[in-house]
Each structure stands twice: as structure tokens, then as C-alpha cells.
Length: 381
Image 1 (spheres, rainbow, N blue to C red):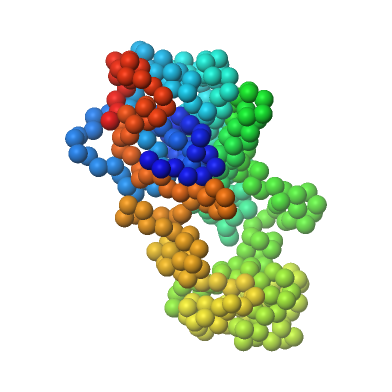
Image 2: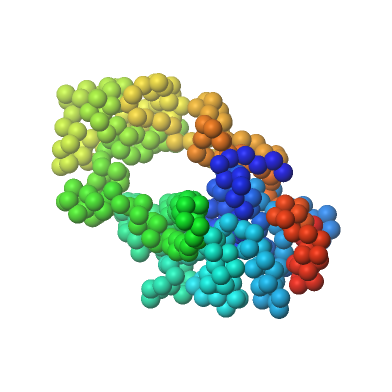
């Protein structure tokens, strides 16, 4: 397996989880990290293919292990000894009950970066209860700010992937820099509630200054401003308008066939409903793609709203290779772009246990150690 990227010397032990944990692993693997995932022990029929559509699982190898079985913790601790990073996504206390909490792991490997991914964090009155993205952003204030008459869930982008997996990856890289400098590892408490609150930092700043109204649809960036929103076109599709600056606003208004001098002032909030009605009426006269042609290459901040099926074929995305086809699956390319050590997709998603034998060899385990792992219940191929 050929890896490329700035993290290609980093070994990551990933305890299988859902959502933000695998997303963090994907980010690290795309940047070259060698990820070995410990999957739940299960029966896999011979010849069973991997789920090639599980894009977040790309770039790693796998072994299977029953973490509750006697002797399994010794296998994990042996792996920890060779790892630079451990990622886990259980509720608080689970890893401790398995004998794999931070204390035994850091005792075994003082340089280890121990990454913990939860919704509510490792402490607090809600730390032990279940939740999902929508619950975490509800508590951070993010959900309240998005939508119209009622809050609208922004998929699971804000807590799971933005405030969760991405923040965990940032914490891991930060801790790796410290470990390289001081020789000391540390524990990362990455909570999706914390991360989604952090993403809201600019808006909390505006709220504190009085520049933000704590009511949906009342501000520039939450759909309140008529020149920052989504409008339906003649074919039932949509365009996105982000004409905030006066020069962009003026160009936008002229190109949709309206006279800026005949309209209320851009910043006159009392008149925003009139502006919104005028823009909606004008934009309904042409199709989405007709507007895209009219605004192509123009500094007026109007773009077509593309579906997930359409986005990979857009000329800009094609030119930048924003999407790639790997092993027959179209998927987002590694991001961000690095000029000296660019990342890459190292391999497709593995089925449980796939690639584990090669990983054992690459991590420096000899035949006796591998045999010991097998006797303890580890399965790999």
C-alpha cells in the first residue's frame, strides 16, 4: 500500500465507531496516516466483498477482535505500544471498563495521542446519555439559528463532521506536534457540542456586540437578508444569492433586470420583504441554468444550487478534481491541498479483518506476536 501525505509516518489505532470517528480517520488517512481499525468480531462469509460505498472507511486496514473477551486488552495494548494515535468513540467510561482507558495506554506508550470522540464530552450532567448531531447542535445554539419558521437540521454536517471529526483531527495533529517536541502524549476530549459551539464563534461575537438578532431569519447570513438566500427559478430549481457587498449587490440587481435606484435601500431592514418579493419575481422568469450562464464569470455572487448528482460534473469541480472516481465509486477527493506533500486515497474501504496481516508486519510484529494475537481472538487476513 503506497501512502502519501505529511502524516505517512504516523500509525493510528482506530477503535471502530460511527460517524465522526471514521470521518476523522478518513481525514488522517487521506493525509498519509497508517490506520489500523479494530472491528467487532463477526462472521464474514468467504469471498464477501467490502462495502466500497462506505467512503469514510477508505485508506485503512482492519483486524477483528472481541474487546470484551479475556486477553483482548493485551492485544490492544501491544498495538498501542507501536501506535502514535488511538481513536475511540464510546460513551465515557467504556474504554476504562475494557481496561483500555488513557491511564493504561499512556503507561504503555507515554507518547500516545489518545483521541476521544463523544457528543457531550467526557464530563457534565449529560455526558452519559445518548444523542445525535441534531441534539448536540440544539444545545450549542447552532440549530436555533438555521431555518425559517422552525429550525432546519443541516444534515449532520455541523456536529458529526464539522464540530466532531474535523475538530478531533485538528486536536490529534496539534497533540502530535507537542509529542514530537516534548515526548509526551495526551488525551483529547473532543465533544461535538463543544465543536459546534466553536463553529458558531463569529455569530456569538456578533450577538454579544448587538449586531446579531437572536431570531431566525433576521440577520444577513441566516436568510433574513433578501440578497443572501435561495430563490426558485422558472424550472422549479434554485439559485443561491450571496450579494453582500454593495458592488456585488448592484451588479446582481442589474443582471436580474431591476433598477437599483427604483428599489429600497439594500440595508433598510424594514424594506427587506419588498426586496425579497422583487427578487423572487425576477428570478422566477428564467431557469436555473439560464441564470447560471448570465452570471458566469461575474462578481455578483449568484450560483446554481446543484444536486449531489450534478455537483461532480460542474466545470469548476472538474477542473480542480474536487471529486474523484476510486475503485468505481465517485467520491470527494482528499482535502485540503498541500503543495509539497499532497494527500491521496491509499486504498478502498476494507471488510472487517482485511489487510490486518500486512498491517501487523508493517507495524513490526514478528510471527510469534501475530500468533499470540490470534490465540487471544484476533482475526485478520
